[in-house]
Image (cartoon, rainbow, N blue to C red; front, side, top):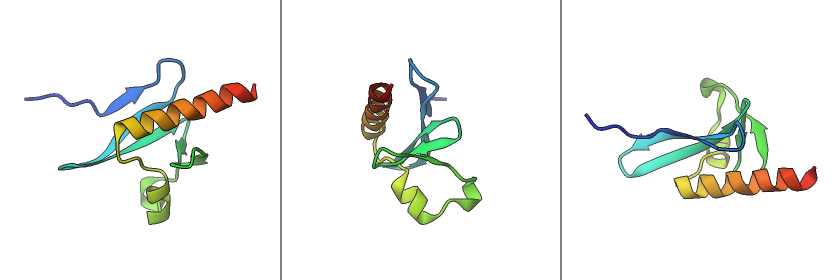
Length: 84
């Protein structure tokens, strides 16, 4: 049996990146923090329950690579620190 990572926690915050779809070569990642989800535009939004997520929400709040999700999270956290 092989193990595969499905979640990564940011070392300096409670944010995490989760593998939410793993269908062959097509993987999607969500960036989550306290019930919110980061959009590809860098904005945090409340994440509805899975049965209430629209196609638009999923398109706007899923990343097609771990690198893209990590970059967006780091940029979001940096801009948050800049506002303090």
